[in-house]
Image 1: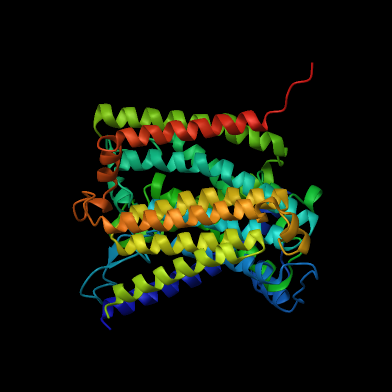
Image 2: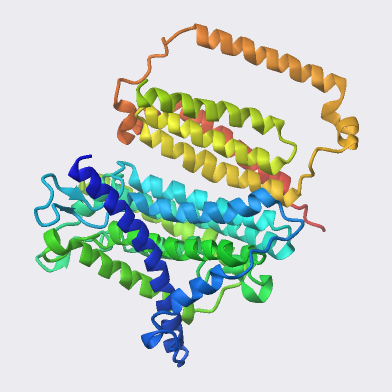
Length: 340
Length: 173
C-alpha cells in the first residue's frame, strides 16, 4: 500500500463520517433556526445550548421498536430505506471539495480532495439522484398503506417533473464550463473579472442557478415542495409505516441529499473552493459556501408555506421547464457566438 | 485472470440472470426491479469498454427515467399477481394461438441473432478511445448517423402524439 492509497482510504472514511455528522449538525441547525424564526428557544436541555440533541434523537430512534405492517412486502419494505441511504451517500463520492494537497508535505504525490475523480461526474450525480427515487417509490408501494402509496406516487411524479429542469440547468453549466468533470468546472471559475467580481458561473448562469436551486429543493422533497410527506394530507407520506432505524435512514438520506445538492451547486455555480488563498484553505471556502446554501434551504422551509399539488406540477412543467429550455438555448447560442 | 475479465463475467452473469428472472417473476414490481438490475450490469459493461458517458447515460435514461415510469404505471394500475388459476385459463395471451405466435417470434429472434453475430465486426465502429468523448459521440450522432437520429425523433414524436390522443378525454357538448 502506497501512502497515497492510504491517504485516499482515510479521505473516503473522513467524507463518510463527515456526511453523517453533517446530517446530525443539520438536524440541530434546522431546529434552532426554526425556533429562531418562530420566536422560540428550540432544543436547550441536552448538553450545552442543546448541542447534544441530535445524539439524543439517534439514541431514541435506536431503542424504538422496528415495526412492519403485516400486509407489507417484507423484502422491498426492508430494501427501500437502504436504497435511499445508499444513493444519498454515493452521490457525494464524485463531488470535489478542495484542490490538491500534500497534507503539509506528508505525501510525495498530491492528494485530490475528492473520493473518486470521474470525468463524467455531473452525469453521475444526476444518475444517482434518479436512482434515489426508487427508495421512496418502493417504500410507498411496499408499505401497503394508502398514505404511503399516495406519498410514493406524488414523490415519483414530482421528481420526474423537476429532474428535467434540474438536468437542463446542469447542461447550461457544462456548456459554459466546457467539461463534464466537476474538478475542471471549478478550475474554470478561478480568477476575477475586472479584478472585483469572482469568475463564478452564477454570474454567467443566473437563471441556471435559480432553476437549479428550485429544482434541488423539489428533488430533496423539502418545504415548500414537501408533498410526498405533507403532514396535513398524508400523515407522513412514504415513510408513514416506518419506525426506528429504517425511518432514521430516510431521515438521514433527506439531509445528506440536501448537503449533496448544496455541494454540487457550490461546485457548479459558486466557484467551489475558489477564494483568497485557495491553495491552502480552499476546503474552508467550500464549507462556508455549502453552509450558506444549507442555511438558505432551512430559511426557505420555515418561511414559505407549502404550495398546492397542482400548483407544483403546473409550476414545474409550465414555468420552470420552459425557462430552463430557453436558458439552455441562449447559453448554447452565447457559447457558440462568443466562443467561451 | 485479469480483474477486468472477472468484472466482465460478473456483470455479464448479473445481466443475463436478471433478464431471465424478469420473465420468470409473477409479481410485476419485481420484474421491473430486476430489469433495473440488468440495466445496471449493462452499464458496468460499458464502463469496462471505456465508455463512461454511455454507461451513465444508460443509467439516467433507462434505469432512471424509463423504469420509474414503468414502476409508476405498474403501481397506478395495481397490476395483479399472475398466480391464480383464473389467470392461467382465461388470460388471452395464454391461449394456443398467441402462444404459437410467440414461439415463432422467439425462433425468429434466435435466427436473427445467429445471423447478426455471424457477420463479424464489419460495422465500421469507432476508433479506440473516441467512444469516451462526449464531443465525438455528439458529432457522429448529428453527422454520420443524422438520418437515423431524426427518424428516431419523429418516431418518439408520433408516440407522444398518440399518447396524448389516447389519454385525452372527449369534451362533452
